[in-house]
Length: 69
Figure (cartoon, rainbow, N blue to C red):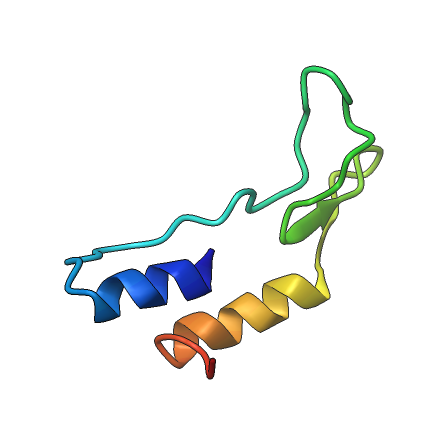
């Protein structure tokens, strides 16, 4: 989606922001807690949070105001 957002900006769209789905692992109505696609993994027993590689990658995207295409 970031590449599409970048193309839209190049086409003149005044894009103000981008939201990632999902910041943390969460409850899905059909899958329950079994699907883990958040940037931050949650241990549901201890409530500990751990940054995934994708979170570190996205941190760099934010820091650099984008990424190399």
